[in-house]
Each structure stands twice: as C-alpha cells, then as structure tokens.
Image (cartoon, rainbow, N blue to C red; front, top):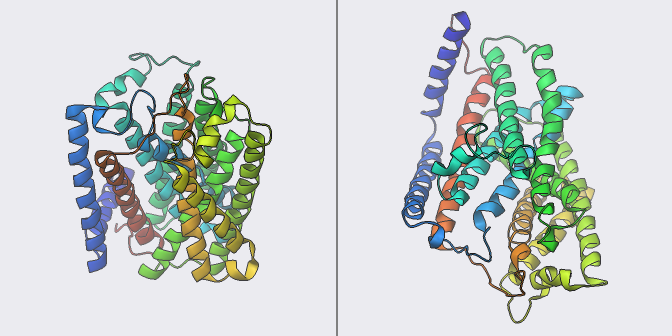
Length: 405
C-alpha cells in the first residue's frame, strides 16, 4: 500500500511538472500537438479511403512508413551503448546520460509501433498478430519474432528506468540486484531487435537487393552511428535548456562510439558496392537503379547521393580528433550523419528492393502529402513522449521532484 501511495504521488508530481515550464517549452509542446492533430486528420482520411491515398501500389508495397520503422528500430537499439557501460561496466561518465538514452529508445519504439499500424491500414487489423486469437504463425514467421522483440525491448526500457527513478524519487539508491539482470537482457535484446528486422528483408528470396549477408551487421553499424548522433544532439539541447548538466567527457565518449560506427558503416557500403558492380548480374539491377538509374527512371538518385555525401562528410569530420572535440563541429557532424543514415536506411534500402519488379517492370514510388503528414505526426508523437519522459526524469535526477512523506 505504501508503494502505491508513492507511485500515486510520483504520477501527480510528474503531471504537475510536464504541465508547467518556460514559454519556449509551452510553444514546443503546442507545436508538437498541432503537428500530431494534423497527422491524425490525415490518418483519418487514410482510414476512410484506404491506402490508395498513399504513393504505395501493388509494385512498391512498402514506402515511407516502413522506411521510418526500419530506421527507428536502429535508433531504439542504440540505447545499448549507454546501458552496457553504465549498468554492466559501471562507467560513471555514461551514467549521466543513460536515462536520456532509454527515454529516446522508448519514444523510438512508440513511433515504430505507430508506423506499423499506419502501414497495416489501421488498428482494427492488429488482432491478427495476437497469439491464440490471430494467425500468429509462430515460430516460422520473422514478423512474429519482430513483434516479440520490439514489445519485449519496450517493456525493458520502460521498467528499468521506472524502477530507478521510483527509488530516486524517494531519495533512495536503486538496488543493483533488481535492475542489473534486466539491463543484461536488454543488451542482447537491443542487438536482437535490429538483427531480426534485417532478417525480415533477408528472408525474402524474391528480393535479391536484400539478400545480402552484410545486411544485419550493417544495420547494427548504422544504428550505432545514427543513435549516438541523436543522443548527442538531444544532450546538447538539454544542457542548454535545463539545470541537468552532462559533462563534456560524456559527450566525447558517445561521439567516439558514433565515429567508429560511422567508419564501419562506410566500409560495409564500399564492400556492398564492390559486390554489386565489379561483376554485375541481373540481380544487380536494383542497385543500378538506386545509384545510377535504370531505363530513364532515376527518382532515387538525388536521395542516395545526398545520403552518401552527408555520411562521408560527417565521418571525415568525426574522424579528426580536433574537429570532433569542437562541439559546434561535432553537433553539425551528428546532424548530417543522422539525416544521411535516415535517407540511406529509408529510401535507399526499402524502395529499391521492389524495383524493378519480378517481370522487370519499373514502377517508381513517391510519397503523397497524406503519407508525409502522417509521418510527421508520428515523429511529433515520439518527440512529445520523449519530452514528457525527459522532463520528469530530469526533475527527479536534479532533486526537484521528491516524495513528501
């Protein structure tokens, strides 16, 4: 009963915290709410008229929604770079940022699930994925495994920080024997969620563009580049707008992880390009379409070459020690790296897998305004969720929120 009273007090204090703030904070939350409402309106049009209002068709059946889903799975998995050093290796430098990283993982997973619902056409079909009710097809279906690992990882990233914050709210230290087992599981689970997502594509034999043994490792490399890049940018905003101070050495350590991952990601890209173009076969047509166009169709050319340029520039900036330690350069490099990987793992991975079709027909894909606004609404939802979680966590960690007996 005592714990329930503390939890009720925590919820009440958290609600009071997230509903009060500076003028900039209220403008930020109002902007996110407006974008979410516009996204909901566009989604209502999609529910009413069906997926025909999107740019997807019977040739290219995955578009902007699944592209963002794939990318955000990697962002969620990147929380492991903070969880393992903090909870397992007891690195105090990472301890300052670990709750922020886990909050980002929760927000990313919420967006992942929202994009899946949007791509399925509506929430009414979700019952198909409920064990014992729908056609779950366990254990043969890779999609089944993806549903399990995503929801399991969401549970871990919710319960571990909640327990730690619950103890800190009472002015007590969290007991390591309670959260360390879950932290160890989450380390392996984070890798599993992205590998299983990669296996979803690799297992489709009719799509040779995805039948690549490097797909899984490259998913992880790009995740551990884009995820830390986003964490650094978020920490920069938090440092400038709150009393929660993160040491420079913490950001520098995270930047080192992003640097190594970005370098590995580029090496894997070069390896894939060599495989596709040194001795090309008819299975190389999707790659040829992506990088050079095919039969006069070249809609993805500006996207992929922009992504590669941003990745190369960001990796070069991060590689040089003096440039990486200049925080203005670091933030710029993290931003363009995040955008570059978003393009590469979205349009650069999903769309070419469907082009050309099994009979050689080329049908290009371009997202509609409905798709774009629904996508922006889901991103706004993720930012809204993260802002609420971060504001509460920061209030507890700096001592502003404490249980009053």
